[in-house]
Structure formats: C-alpha cells, structure tokens
Amino acid sequence: MRTRVQAALLLFVVIAVAAFAIPLLLFTASDRTQQLVLARSADLDRFAALMDQAAATGDTSAVTAEARRYTALYGEPLVVTDTRRGTVVQTGGMRAADPAVARLLDAALRNQTEHPSGALRPWSRGYRMFAEPAGTGTRVSGAVVLRASVGTAADEITRRWAAVLAGAALVAVACAVLARAATGWVVSPLRRLDRAVGQLAAGLPPEQTRAGGPPELRQLAIGFNRMARTVTAALEQQRRLVADTSHQMRNPMAALRLRVDALHTHLAPTGERTYTGVTTELDRLETLLDDLLALATAEHRAGELTVTDGSGVHCDAAAVAADRYRLWEPVAERAGARLALTSAAPPVPAACTDRELAQIADILLDNAIKYAGEGAEISLDCSGASGAAVLTVTDDGPGLGTDELALATTRFWRSGRQRENRTAGTGLGLAIAEQLLSGRAGRLELTAARPRGLRARAVVPRAVVGGTNGADGAGGSGGEAGADGAVGSGGEAGADGAVGSGGEAGAGGAGDAR
Image (tube, rainbow, N blue to C red; front, side, top):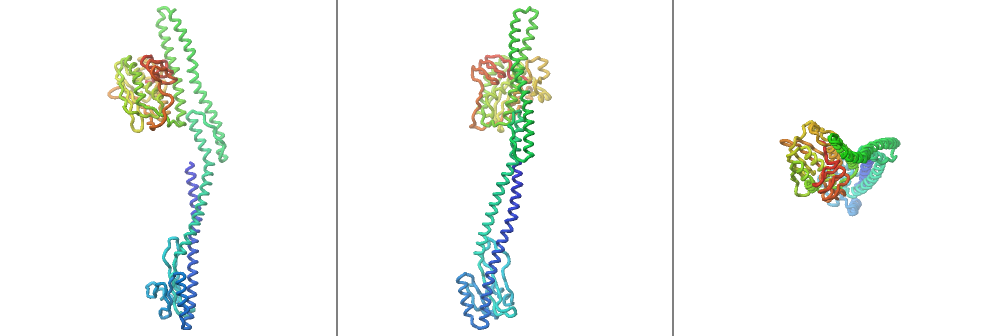
C-alpha cells in the first residue's frame, strides 16, 4: 500500500513540476530567440541607413568600412548591394552570388524583410539568415543580408534550461520527501497493525499497536489493541488448559499406577484379567496425555515460526536419517519387520533443527513399524531435490484407502483396521509431525505405495549452506531425550521421542495417527 500511495503522489508531483517547468523552458528559449532577432534587426537597420546615405551621396566608403569592422568584431558576414544587385560590400566569405543569399537579396529589393522563424533550442547550431531593404517605405535604395551565428544564444539557452531543470529537480525532491513523510505517517500504523494481526493469527500475543497517523487509524489501533488482548487471553487460556491438564494429570496417573501395581500381589487369580485391562488403559491414558502436551508444544512452536525469522537454522537431513536408522533398526527387527536405509551420501541441508527432523522421522518410522505388520519391508530415504530436503518412509503393509489418506492427519483419527486390531495409539502422531513441518514452511505428504503400502514424505525447505545449526540437536548415544527429542542408543524415551535400540517405547512414543 505504501508503494502504491507513494507512486500516486510522485506521479502527481511529476505532472505538477512538468506543468510548471515545460512552459518556463519554452518561454526562456523563445525570449532568447527574440532577443537575438531584435539585436540583429537593429544591426540591419543601421546598415540599411548607411546604405541609404551612400545611395544618396554616392559614397559607399562608410558602409564598407562599417561592415568590415562589424564582421571583424562579431565574426558574422554581411552582403550589401544597390538596387541593381551591384555588390557594395561582402565580408566573411559570404557572396551575393550564393543561391541562398541571392534569394534573400531579391526579397529585400522587393521591399520584403526576412527574419528566421522558430525558437532556438540548446542543441541548435549553425546560423540564421536576416535580410532587410535599405531606403524608405516607398523607395528601395539597396539590400542588406546578414548571416548571424546562433551558438552564443544556444549556449545561453542551455544555461537557462539547466537552471530551470535544477530548480524543478529540487522542487521534485522536496515534494518526494514530503510525500514519503506523509505516506509514512499514514501507512506506518497500518504496517504495525498488519504485523500485529499476523502475530495474533499465529496464536502469539501481538505487540500493542501505537496510536499514530490520522484520527481514524488511531481509533482503529485502540480498537484492535482491545480486541487483541481479549483474543490473546482466550487463546492462552485454551493453550494452558491443554498443557496444564496433560501435565498436572501425570502425578495422579503415577500415583494410580503405583497403587494398582501394589494391588497386584493381593489379587486372586480370577482378577488377573481385570488387572491387565486396567494397566493397559493406564498406559493408553499416559500416552494420550504425553501426546497432547507434545501437540500443544508443536502448535505453539509453529505459531512462533510463522512470525519469526528462522532462516539461520539448519541441519544435515542425511545425518539425521542415518542416526534414526541406527536407533530404529533394532526396534523394527524385534517387531518382525526389516528396515533399510537408502539415504543420500552427501549432506542434505534442511531448514529446521535436527531435533525437529528427528522427531518427525521417529513419528513416521514408529507408524510404519507399528502398522505395517510382521514381515513388512520398510525403507528410510533422504534426498534433496527442487530446493527441498525430503525424508521418505515407505512400507509394504496394508496401507490406507483413498478416503483414509485425507483423514490421516486429523487429530485422534484412527483407521477402522487399527480399531479392529486394537493397535495401541492415540491418533496424534501425524498431527504433531504436520504441525512441526508447517512451522518450517514444509509439508507432510501421504500417498499409497506401489504395489501396496504407504509412503510418507516429510518435505522441508532446503537450507542455505553456511547458516548456523540449531541449538537443540538430537540426543547422542546413551543419552536421555529432552522434552521432545529422540534419545540415543540404549536410552529411555522422553516426553514424545522414540527410544533407542535398547529401550522400549515410552508413554509418548512416536506418532500413532495411522
């Protein structure tokens, strides 16, 4: 908007300055041309008077001497003739026999005055011809032709035009500065308001828009600040409700599990089945709480990244894929599946942190191992193409139908086959992965594999080489995961990370949306 307003104002300034400068330029050129004509006409009048005296007295020495002195002083040639076309004096190399001069002499002898027409310009060069008869109005006693140079007049017109154009440029610059200041005064509050709207849309508390600009915009800023406070408070309360609920319920859940475990030794054999059902539901509830916390964290992070600059963050997607393969290959083997790695050898820079990419890979691999079934062939591939880093997990399991693919990232959604088989899961894994990818301007693509199975592609924009890596890398060998990272070999799962080769899936294990 600022550019369009400035363009309109600058166009008006250009038109206004041009409407003032162009007539002034034309006037200065016409005025200097008129001065030249008047000056040379006065010279011609003087020579015509001398020729008229010479015709009356028969003595042409005065007109001859004056013509030669004039040419020597000004460098402009003259030709003076009597009524019979007899040459009285000719100077500066101009001859009465020249066709152009002869034509002007004939006109002057017919008592016609010849002055050049058309105004001079700075680029005008050469000369202009003047002719005037000698004698009275009814009697012609001779003719005078003058060839005047226009170089001096054109140079003066150039200086005048330069002064006019410089003044016009100064006026245009001053008007442009005023237009820019006025546009900034009007548009700056709108830009701050637009930035605040973006922050509010991302679920972040927007900065308070300062009142400025016209009264209408000041009133709009006041109203927006009031609305932003209300909306931000509601969003924050909703986010805290989800996060606090999942967090605060962990302590009662842990206490409940301890009491249930303590009851196990006192149960009769007939209660063993009921005890197993209770512990299974406790595991499911703990997983659900952990995934809810992970989803709330991912949504908040995605909202932050939509309005903040994360361009300096990058990781090597190929290295992350290789690390995830080492961690998940034993897990796949225990599940009766085979995991293969076909990652690219050179580094594949991705515009995200290695922890985020590791968490996404954990979700996709956990889904493939969990739902592809025993004997499944699973492949993990990392490649870079079309300005993006692509992490692909493909399995040859039962896959999903066309209608189910469109619903796979819906929260708490699980396919009918999973419900029939009573496969553990909450239906939040792919939703978490999608939020993490969207925060980095990436996307999650789910398609059917051929001849059967599912292909999940995590597409992340390719990072600019030379950027700084993220501060939150994936856990190393033997370490424990952070709040949402994957752990190393032999470690225990974090809140929503995958376990290593020696561990079991934690309560918030990787994704389970399929």
